[in-house]
View 1 (tube, rainbow, N blue to C red):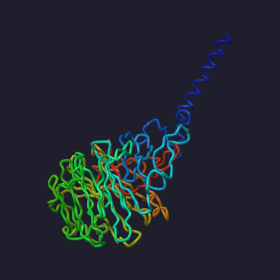
View 2: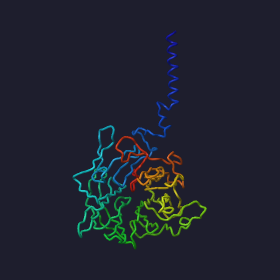
View 3: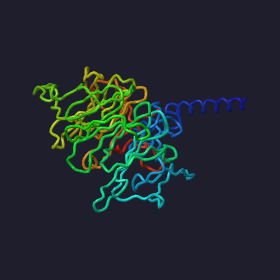
View 4: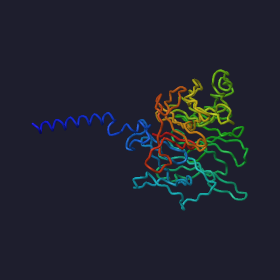
Length: 405
């Protein structure tokens, strides 16, 4: 009888203990939530809201979205921070970086900018000052096609004694690429060129002035580009564009009513992208006095024909540094816009380039940016440029990226 009583007491104790554990979130698992998610979840699980795919950075980083882990494309001396991705057995690190490689000649004038082929494991690399000129010999810029996994050069490189502007891009089918360039004279007009993968010119046009001309390819070979305060759309694999958006025709943007609460739009910030299905364009507009710290730019979306223009998102009014949106990209299924923003960072850290990376539902209309997951927004966690196992929220944005499957 005493043994039965002792057994019942043990069962009662175990029951109470299990209730206490469940109430505490199971082994203390809720403590991270109570502290705002200070400790990242296990990297073996999906830490970014179930999102999948990879982020291709223009400076050679590849970020796996489910784990947030980073690696560097090998074969190119991208910068002094990290030559290439080096796997390691050390449990405290995901990768190690070497800061020099004697097999690669790199001078202080050389810089690199990569854009991916959406149909293959290769990328297009713009090399500024691939050959350093001396005396009367001008510098040369190059375009190269390289393998993402191995870094190996594919075919020959294109060498031009001209200034090849950063941002050369593959067509969606991966068979052509486009780029802009200027000759060695500082005030030369900008030329726009379409080449095939053998670096043979298909068509080109020289504009009437020097302009940066950001552009993007659509799924059928059409191109959208910005030039002189307007956005143009071309037929497939052509440069004969038509104007679909012009700030001079938008007084509601450039001169809003005084009581509207809207800052005047003063320019197109660039980095425009066509949606995967070719129906919409996302881009940023500069707003307010760009000479002041309060100047801002925000993401906007419109239909491919220029209709239904609307702002995608804005930040809370939280001091001088707000609405500092950066590069953007569509998700492969078109459901999200991936974009950086720096409003959480204050003071001198803003100029340091510390950003947060967000996935915003692409059907949003002027929603308020947040890191709590409201309105379907997902704050992306990465260990970009961090060589340990902690997965961070801060994302050092770089100059552009693509969301790959």
